[in-house]
Structure formats: C-alpha cells, structure tokens
Length: 411
Image (cartoon, rainbow, N blue to C red):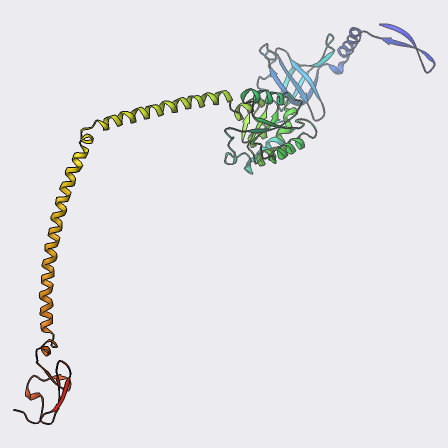
C-alpha cells in the first residue's frame, strides 16, 4: 500500500492506493472476521441446480429481487439431497466464502432444508397450466401438421442471439433455397413477452411464410420465463400458421411447448424438424426416377414379348382363313333364315286373304251387288211375313238406293 499526497478543495489529503491483492486480502479478512457472515440461514428459490460427478453441487439462490451463487462441496457427505430441482423453496445453512485470486464470493453451503411447497413462481405456473389446459390450449386436437416442403419460414428470436445464427446456419446447410423472415424480439426480461407476441402476430400476416419458429437458446429458469407467460402461450395457440416452440432447455414445464404445434429441444432441433435436407430429397428423386425407368423398361420388354407371342400364335396366323370360313357359315345361315321368313310370310299372307274373303262374304252389303235387296220395317230387317200387316210402309234397300212401298196384300 502506498500513501500519496493530493489536494482536494485546496486541502492536502493522504490518498490510499491498494494493489488488487492487498484489497482482496482486506475484504477476505473483513468477511472472515465478521460474525454476521458466518453460520447463518438463507431462504429462497433454487435456480440453475447442477450436480457434478466430482461430488460438488452448484446453484443460485434467489428471491423476487436478488440472487446469490452457492456451492456445496462433497454434498453427499453433508447428507444433502440429490433430487433438488429448479423452483424448490429451501433454507440453506452456511458461511460466506471469498476467493482472493478471483475476487468472487459465494455461499459455502453446509446443509439444505427443503420446504414442502414449490417456489412462488412455480406455484403460479402450475395454476396457469391447469387453467389453460381446461380451456383446451394444449389439446392435440388443435395441433397443425408441419408442411412437408416449406418455401419460407418465420423466426421470432433475438437477432443478436446464438439461436438465430444457429437457425440460419442449419437452414442453409439443409436447404439453401429456403427464405427466412426474422422478427427480432427480446426473449427475456421486461418487455419480452410483448415482443414475442407481436412477432408471432406479424409473421402470421405474411402470406409467403409456411411455418414459424419461436424460441431462444438455453438459460436459467428466469431467462426462459417469458415463454411461460400467459400472453405468449395464447399467441402460440392462436397462430394460424404451424408454429414450433424452440427453447433450448431440458426441463418440461415451459407452457409454450405445450401450446405449440410441435416442441423442439433447441432452435437447431426446430430446423431439423421443419426443414428437409435438400441432398436427401434429390437422392430420393434420383432413386425414384431410376425405379420408374426400370419399371417402364420391364413393362416395355414384357409388352414386346407378349406381342411376339401373339404374332406367332397359330390362331392369329390362320385368322384370315378362319374369318372367311366363319363368314361363309354366316352367309349360309342368313340365306336359310331369309327362306324361313319368306315361307312364313307367304303362309300368313294366304291365311289373311282367306279370312278377308270370308269377312267380305259375310258383309250384308255384298249381296246387293248380286241383285238381292234388303227389306226393313221400322228399321228392322223383315225375315218373314208375320212381321208386317197390310197398309204398313216398308223400306227396300237396293245397291244404288231405297224404295218406299205400302203392303197391299200378304200371301
């Protein structure tokens, strides 16, 4: 440590100048000697829980406004549970540890007491999940199918984030002709949920877009929490275009995953789900083309063989002769049928003449032509003399007229 003179407001003052090592030693001494930093309890929610094979446990303890790093070395020997998870509400007992070389401090945990309830955030999340599930937002009945060969995709994520660059890189690698529309949105912190919702709505209005990928890279539960907000979940559900929730995480409690049509574990995974590999498509097309050619060749070859077989067929070779023979038989049968029909017609015609003559003979008017007459009295034909009396007027019908006469005498 050096002490230098300096003027301040006209007065000479002694200024202390420390090296970093000196300063860190002072801080460590202060912490180690201060009883308030030793053997105390802290209460809060767990975040970023990580168990290492080395036997150490690291996590962050937080409340609504602050957080602090914690470490439990050789946690098994301290009988610390190995099933701690995000959102657990706990009490930890330990001391403040300060590392001079890095100028960092954390809580050195000796014991962890789990509470019987989830943290406040996860309690609210569970209630929201139950509410939205009852409304049907997670129902598989409303899930849309992904287009098999999209021409353009929309992406809602931070333009500067690794997620967007992974999406672009993977898309170009799989199918370089795909168009990518990006809506740059905050994906964590204040205003994130509003921007994510707006991004989904705007991309839905672009006709060229076939599907939407909305998400971000990994992070703590707090970093990912925007995708648990009710507004965001409803935006996923209302999306008219198929939408993929692509948030880089391993936990299974993001509500956007449940409301989306498809869930991907990472943004890269979303592209692998949505975008086919162009080279594989081309290979399949070549294989199909080859199979089609082979199939056509087989059909043509078989058709040619069938034609040769037919051409050499005995019946086909004798076809003309067979036709002539059949034609002769047909002509003979036709002549025979015509004769039968003519004979039948002649017979029927003769019978008709006979019947006609008989009918003509029965016609009473026919006898008039032969000189005979018909006599009527009161329009009744007289067949004997008993039908008339002397003085009656009778009517005589001849071939060409009638005669009216009076009966003078009856014999």
